[in-house]
Length: 71
Image (tube, rainbow, N blue to C red; front, side, top):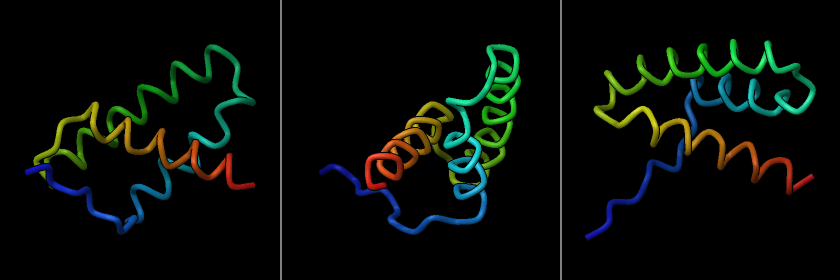
């Protein structure tokens, strides 16, 4: 059986999604720094929830994309 992701968005998720929403306005240097920051945040979240860092980054990117397509 495929396990559903938790539909609730916590504070860490909201911060990461907000960072991703501003990504199109960033320079290459800012984007590299932002990616490092997001990986550190995802690492902290993965320790608490036992999830893969890439899964967390994908989840954040998906939510940011959904928000941009909604508006």
